[in-house]
Length: 280
Image (tube, rainbow, N blue to C red):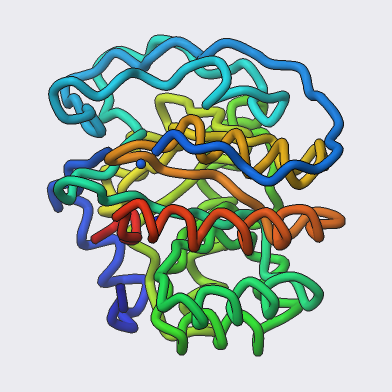
């Protein structure tokens, strides 16, 4: 879960013909022994049918399990969408490569804590930022960019895009790109749909403007605050080569997320894994 040149929006729109990055593809260990609350699980949503198999895992890589993709974070709009590009569920950067994605920030409370942790272990991550948060906390967004992390477009207001009219959904994407560019000088090359809810107009727009649509393959449901050990166990049990791990620095109390990452990151590194951004 790389630096991006600060291009203006006209250049971004002209990039519509770019071929999207092919993606994608971490270990199974036991986590700390702490009390943790359980959380309900949901099965993986249907895969999108389309012309490109973007995000196919390497041979032998298991598909995401219910444990790995669990959660009410999905809105259920994700169905078969013929004739469109497909979201990336894995990175593809060789053995033991994984991606850590941090969603819904920037947050003045938790983003700086996560930045310090990533700096301690020299780990690079992808931060999926909401436009209104970028506007509200521009200095923190700039800190993320200055530290060398990737910034992913996560819409302007984190709305359920398939529930909107197409024009309104695309405006959510473009307005977030403009905010990120204005504040950080970067034009995002990747987009993550809120709730993992994709639609044909959104995917077509991603292709048109040259943004890779990025989903995830490991979801520890940290946003439900299920307990530090639950989050850590879920990641360590489900991560494997190519995994895109979903975590959050915004949207509420993320102290459990920070605590779990303090435990998980060094263990993944000790197991030989290395972190890449989703656009690497």
